Image (cartoon, rainbow, N blue to C red; front, side, top):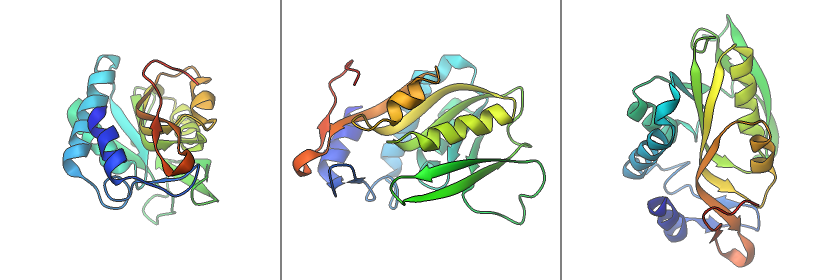
Length: 195
């Protein structure tokens, strides 16, 4: 997705060989026009799969997730990272380790919003080590629902997450795949190439 790649090149900040900061448009400040185009692209790629829900993790997955849900005309459900007094019955949980924050979170969702008749599209901002996607897959399985596919805004192809998640057998679509962040420069993976 060229619009996204251009935004990454123009505004992304390479902090190290493994960390890309995109807080000016994706995970602190949000560019709504870009998110709308991301939602349209996810809807285009997954439109024929009978999706009934979009599932993401708070908070950075919400903007692209809600736009995908809007385009697919289905509800968005987001897994919470923090306990809530209002989320007490029928709670499904999974453990997720955040590479960026260097901490483990228990994510949770109400079984009231994802059930056995659902076909769920998972959406997240980054795919690096794969733990968030695997945690979301676990939540969907526990709910007795089906994972229809996984939409990723930015994949860091040089890390193991993409391989781990693809080994589950689910379809993974990444809108921008980064091959390298070496020497302070973003290098995108060539179309069709698999690391």
